[in-house]
Every structure is written in C-alpha cells, then in structure tokens.
Length: 363
Image 1 (cartoon, rainbow, N blue to C red):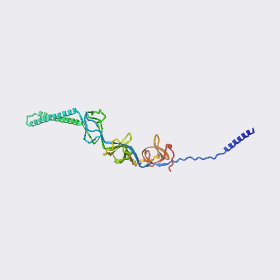
Image 2: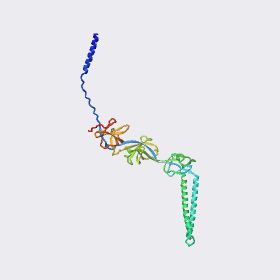
Image 3: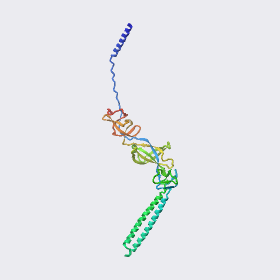
Image 4: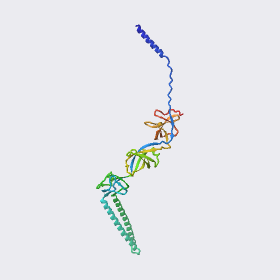
C-alpha cells in the first residue's frame, strides 16, 4: 500500500515538474519573408534568322491529258507508255467516215458557189458594158445583176468558211503532240470508240515534259515575306539519300493560300539525264533571314497556355499580360507581334503562375 502511494506521488511530482518546465517562455523566432526576384529584359527590334525544313514535290514542267476533240474510232496508236515524243509528232489517228463525207460535201458546195459567183459576175460585167449604149439595158436590170453578184459573193464566202471549218474538224482526227515529252499513260487501243462529250474520265494519253521539272514548295506566310526572287535554295530528295541539290527560285504565286497561310514557290530543276521523276518528294532547306523591323524577345519570355500566348510586360511598375503571336524562332529569341513597342520592359523566365498586377521594381 505504501509502495502504491509512493508511485502515485512520484507520478504527480513528475507531471508537476513537466508542467513547470513547459510553462517557461520559448524564445520568439522571427520568420523572414521570402523575397521573390524576377529577371527583366526589353523588347528589341532585331531580325531573327531561322533555318527550317519544308516538304516539297517535283512536278512536270508541262503536262497535258489528251482527250478526243471529236467522236470517232481509234485507227492507230503510234506511241506507248515511256515513248519520247517531239512537238508536232503524230501520236494517234482516229477515223470518222461521216466527217469525211461532210468535208467532201462542204467542198462541193463551195465549188458550186464559186461557179455561180463567176457566172453572175461575168453577166453583170457584160450588162455594164452594154449599158454604155444608151437604151440598150434598163437601169433595173443592171441593178439586179449587181445585187446578184453581191449575193453570190456572200454565199461563196460562207461556203468557203463552212468548208474550212470541216477541214479543221477533220484535222482533229490526227492527235499531235503539243510539246516535247514522255508518254506516261495510255488508255486506248485501235478499234476503241472515243467520244468528245466526256463520257470517259480517263484521257486517251498523258504527256509530260520531264527534261525540265518544277520543284513546288509552300512557304509559310511569315517566312515568304523575307525571301527574295532568285534566292538559291538547297534540297534533298528521298530517292537519293544524302545527295544535296541546289536551285534558284524561279516563280512565286504572290498569293497566300487562305486555308494553310502559305505561298507557293517554284524552282526549276534540270533533268536532262532523266534521273528524276515527277512526283518525287523533297525536303527544302530554307534559311529565313528574318524581318529587320520585327520585334523580338527571349524565348523564355513567351508564355504559352492552353488558351492564349502572351508576354508579361511591366507597365507603371506592374505586370500586364499582352497577347502575342510568334514568327521566326532561333535558339534563344523569337519574333513577336502584338501591342508592344521596342524598348518596353518585360519579365524573363515568365510562367502562368505569375499574375497580372504584381509589383516589379526595375533597377
């Protein structure tokens, strides 16, 4: 019983000592407020060079799908796929007996009209000569003869034009190459009926000029303004890995595609050895010098969120979010377009956590 009382007393004393020890005042710790430091920079007016790789494709310098101009049957086909042809060369012959008969009839009508005109003219000249004798020919007969000459002349000219038209139509039965090139497609054979009404979507022949090719590349709008005519570009073809080709800009569309915001540019490529083919893909290396009047900032100053792209500008000592669009980019700088001026102070290393209205002291 005494042991139990001693234990309780000891426990109470221990608690009391602890309580007394805990009642002592702890020294106050002063917590220093964290000071956030921001790096600042300025908007500059400098060009930004950028090297980009753009997809391109080779195309024939000239190409044409040859369809029939008149209805007829294929008589002969003098070329096939891969045939090299020259301008003016006969490619195909068609036949249409009814057109040949129409041409003969038109020719005969013209010959008859010429004969009628010749007779009426001779008759008028004789009457005119006879009219010199007073009272030999009445003025009415002379006027009628002159009117008949004019009418027969008009009919003769019309018949001549009709015959020439039939000759032109008849010439369509011979298909002639419009330029030098290679036959790349053939879809008809002798005996086939071809129609000029467009019943078939396939051409009779496909002709392409491949000794001279076009390299077509679409350049983004922001870079198209910085390239110059006759600028030399290098490109690589997928069919020839590692081989570098060069050519100069030959043509520009001077029109921006509204869907893709690009401008079509063409380079002439010599293909006299025949190694290249239309349709080959290429990668064009474009070195954009940049716009000398463009506003630029360090890449770290541009904040890109899911909703917008902006820069934290410092105005009247506080941060302001200014929406921008970007252009050329290099390893450390980027072109910007927005409500900004050269020389304005901006935050570097900006991020979405920095809100508007934060006080910034620029030293």
